Image 1 (cartoon, rainbow, N blue to C red):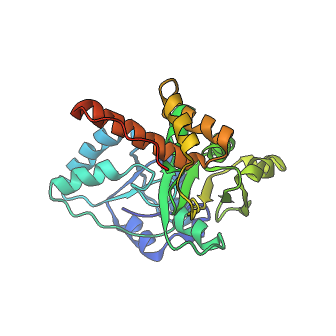
Image 2: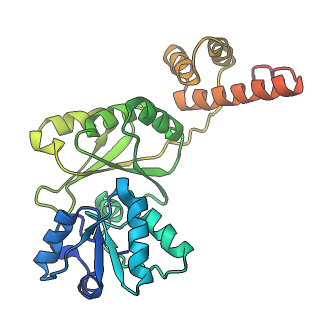
Length: 289
C-alpha cells in the first residue's frame, strides 16, 4: 500500500520510489494519473486499473497475481490507499487469504492541513467525505453538531459551497473553519474564518472554487449551563408529535433562543424514552425543572 503525493510530485518518498520501481505490478486508481508520477521519476512500469466500482473484481485479479508469486503495489490518485480512496477491499481480500500486506506511508492531506491550520487542537475527528446527496449530508452534519472535538472533512470543488452552507446551518454560523485548498500545489491557500464568512471568501475569487478541499471545523463549545428551560422542553415535546426531530429542535431554538444542538439531543432522549415507555408500559417523564 504505497502513499503517493497529494499534489507536488516531488513529495514522494524514497522508499515509495524504490517499491514502485521493484514490484512486478502497480495497481492504480487512475492509471493516467499514476503514469505521470512514474514518468516523472523514470519508472517504466505500466499500471493496471483498480477503481472503486471494480475493486471487488480487481481484488480477485490481484489475488491471482499474488498466488503466482508476483509482488503488487497499490496506489491511488493522491495520498494513502484505503483512506477515503479505494484499497480497503483489496487489503481485506489479501489478508484473509494469508498474503502479507505492507504499508509504505507518505503524504497526507489530513496531516498537511492540520500542520498549517495554526490551531493546536488536542483531538480531532476525521470525517472524510460527506454524502453527496444533500439530505443525507445534512443528517450526517446534524449528528456531528454536538461533537466537541475538531472535525476534518474532505470535499470536492463542485460541492464545497453547498457543504459549507450546510455546515453553517448544522453547526452555527459563528463556528470557526479553516479552509485548505490545493495543498502542495501551485494555487495552495489556507484561510481561517467563520462558517458565515466561508462562502463569501470562496466567491471573492473564481479560482477558489476549484481544486480539492480540506475543511477543519472547530468542535462544539462546552457551555456551563446545559439544562433546557421547562417551557422550551414543553414546546419541544408538543412539536415532536407533529414534526421531525430536527425540525422540532430547529423551530424551538428559533423561538426560544435555546441551543439547537442541546434541543436536538433532548429530542432524541424524549423519543427514546417514549419508545421504551411504549414497550414497558412506563409513563413519560415530566419536564425537568
